[in-house]
Structure formats: structure tokens, C-alpha cells
Amino acid sequence: MNFNDKVPIYYQIKQYIYGEIIGENLKAGQKLPAIRQLAVTLTVNVNTIQRALSELISEGVLVTQRGKGNFVTTDVQLLVALKKRVVTAQFSELYDKLITLKISPPEMVQYLQDYIDQRKEA
Amino acid sequence: MNFNDKVPIYYQIKQYIYGEIIGENLKAGQKLPAIRQLAVTLTVNVNTIQRALSELISEGVLVTQRGKGNFVTTDVQLLVALKKRVVTAQFSELYDKLITLKISPPEMVQYLQDYIDQRKEA
DNA sequence: TATAGTGTAATAGTAAATTAGTTCACTATA
DNA sequence: TATAGTGAACTAATTTACTATTACACTATA
Image 1: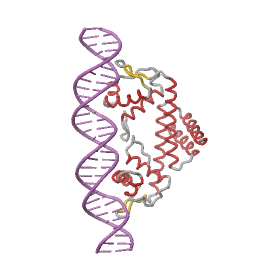
Image 2 (image 1 turned 90 degrees about the vertical axis):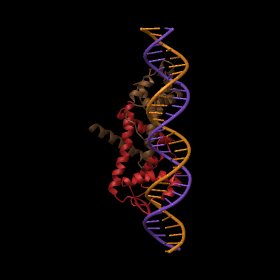
Image 3 (image 1 turned 30 degrees about the vertical axis):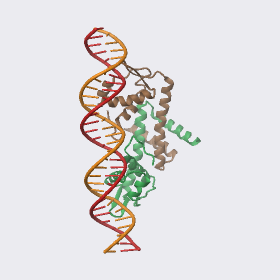
Image 4 (image 1 turned 120 degrees about the vertical axis):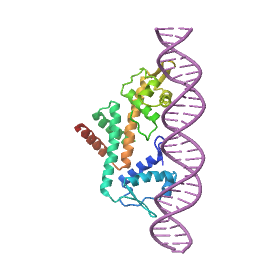
């Protein structure tokens, strides 16, 4: 996996798992790969995986069954709230940053549209 | 200043100065506050300021005049390129993240518009 | 009941970021 | 020519993230 060396790896893994769940590569109730397997896949130490998962468990996004593995919660309401929270956070971050750059909201929409068009070409 | 504890402070300061320049609170050729003053203002150590500035100097965004201070470059072309680079990076980051969340480009535009409308209400 | 697969916990070592503090070098000016 | 203001460089100490390694506890099943 490609990590950004400006952000703690455990935190990036946490965000990555959010993404896998919200994007439904991991569905409600589904079992995650074993932590030792995740460590190999993500080329990271088991402790680092543990640290990421422990936060997701605290939040109720994941549920552990000792001896069995980690599972995505079946609490769909929680997952819906998670998606909203994560998506909103993206826009909030963008908005605030662009405001400091003195880019107006209508310009933001135009810039996004332009960026999308440009991506389509390539 | 409000720092995100997930990202090195020196790096956040660097981004902050980018913002001040792009948003034209700091104009081409303008003198920056002294590093000791910046350290006080941003409640951070002088060394941390130095580290942020040294990268901006390497990039040519800032120019040092020893004994006088640090100044924004007068190379306007470089500043225009900087703005483009920083703004594009924002959209690129958003786009890639939302794609992993299986949000389509048209949805992105709609979500952004919705977010903006929501901010206006409050 | 042995064994393989799972998560949990703890210790130790390394590297990076940050702070604190000091000293030096250059510039402008009273 | 002192002095105040500026950046530059260096050392030392602390904290956090990460890795490596080991041992333990629970579950399913051959």
C-alpha cells in the first residue's frame, strides 16, 4: 500500500478501512482478513494494524469475536452515519482550504467541474 | 494556531504560508515576519519555523536576505504555478478519495453544491 | 484432545518531530 | 562603532510512531 509519510500509518489504515466499508468492498457483518494477513498485505507490522483496528472497534465500526476474527458491524444505522460523516469531512476540508485561498463557492464548483472534465480526457 | 496532530507541524506551517501567499495576504516581494516573531505568533519553536521556511526557500517561494529577513519571491510566474499546483492538489485529493467511496463525478458536483448551500444557511 | 487459526498484550529498540537553549554571522542604524 | 534585529547552526532531551519479537488466550475442527 502507498502511504503518505506525513500522516501516521495506523491512521491511514483506519481511513482506508472506512473507505472499504463505505464503498461496500466490506459489507455489514462481513469478516475482515486476519490481522496477520492484513499486516502482510499492507506491508506493515501487526501492532500497527492492531492500533488502527482498536480505534475502529472503540467506535463500534468493527466487532471482534475472540478466536474468530474481526467483523464489520451489522448496525446499518451506524454505517449510514459513518458514510455521511466521512463524506462531509471531505467537503468540509476542501471548502475551508479553498476559502483561505480566497476561492469563492461558485468558483469551487466550476473548478471541480473543470477538474473532472480534465480527468475524463486522460 | 490550530494544528492537526496527525500531520507534522512544520508541514502544516508550510501549507499555511502557501495559503497566505496564494490568498495574497502575503504579496510578491513582501517581507515575512521575523522567524522569532512567527514562532511566538504560531506558538511553536523557532526550529520548527525554520524547518518549514527552509523548504519554501528551497522551492524558491521565499528568498532570504541574511540579516534582513525572508521575502516572498518576486517571480510571479512561479507564484502562478504554485497556485495552480496547490489548488489542483485539493481537487485531486478529493476526487481520488471519493472515487474509492464509489461516489461518481456527477454526484461529487451535486454533493459539493449541497454542502455549499448548507453552509450558506448557517 | 492436539493443532491451526484467530486476537491480545507486553517489552525493547529505532527513527522522526518537536522543543529548549546557546552561539554565531550578517545588516542597519543610532 | 556599539547595538538591536535578523537568519543559521548545533546539541540535547522528550514524545510519538513504528517495528520486531515473544508469549498468551480463545475457537473450531481433524
